[in-house]
Length: 249
Length: 295
Image (tube, rainbow over all chains, first blue to last red; front, side, top):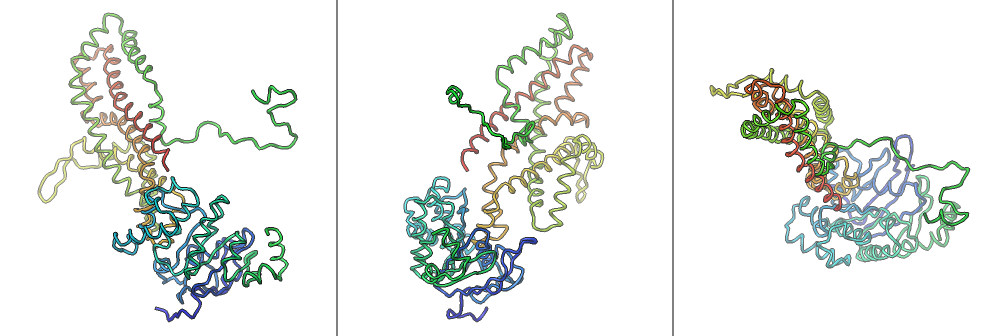
């Protein structure tokens, strides 16, 4: 194992480059994230936000630089990806629940099949998690019977059931109606309050300002500016950031 | 109606700008359920009509004197043709389907393997047997397979019907392989990613997440191929396998090969195949509709 200690960044991204064919989407991105921090990555579409967090759990490979999670290099050929993904949970924009399984089974599946944990124990935990995301009573519903916001909360519970150290949220409210956005954001806020390390790609500026410890603004594959929410929203120095903020605020 | 009736208002778009019209492809897209969909669309009244055409055609061929004799001859042979002949067609189709499905499922999974040599090999076998003429495959199997196999001194005979089963199962295997591949491909790749991010291995993802989702949608095209296979079983008569067409020809020879026997005897075979496949078609289309509602 590596000699990572909690005082060091839990995720360290250094000069990461990523191309799809000839298109370079990430042109040298660096950031350090400490345990328990909540990071929001914002920026115009196509700026590489989603690609960046997909690289963190190796759903995308990178062409240069390095990403370490708890001191472990992610893009090392010898890396056990399954071990990495046990530490890093991910929630997607389109929820991606397993449609043939009920909400409860969706949450229970990975701990039972992947971690080989005891079924009864996992079920207790899964029920508690569904309660935590305020879905008590929906355990036996199938994804098709749940609203977008409910499905997304099941997806969060499903990720949490693996007891990850870090949670990645990839525009998790982008596909929801305005009314249901709030219920998902409340869930994420609870998580952040409990000390879960969270990395969010989001367009919810109000939410970012409220929960984030640190905000990164990306544009055209580079980090243009970063800082605490108040620094970022009130005293943005870069013209690109100012322009972006003036358009959406 | 509506806007057309209001003076000065037309429902037709009026613009000098280029308008992108909705895309309507010429003809029909390829439908993997072509046979059963057509069969199931035959209304029951038409069947009654066809049953009337059958003796009428026989009458037109043989005239009023020959026809009752010909049907009387058919009546004598019906138990033999049905119980010895058609039942055997069904037996051949079931065995060929069983072997074809098992081999086809394995081949289909080979086509989506992440080992490139296995993928290429499975693809090649699939294309070969999917596109080769069935009769040619049947003859090759008939001539290439030994008529008996010697296993540790035990002589196991391989009768012609067993070779026919193997011969027919090969194109079925190739088509089932395509059904499996197509069904797996039809599951959105986001499901693979979601499973991957939950630490499922590739094999676990395939067996526990992807295949359970697409199992249902494989059933209707699978039944379509069963119907095609059943209707292809008369090909075995060319190998001398005793099935309904072989026996029909033998029966007609026993009845002195009178030409007026042709329409009653082959018409009977046709009616039997229809009677067997029609309910399968209706059932499959109903099943497809039921599966379509639930995602």
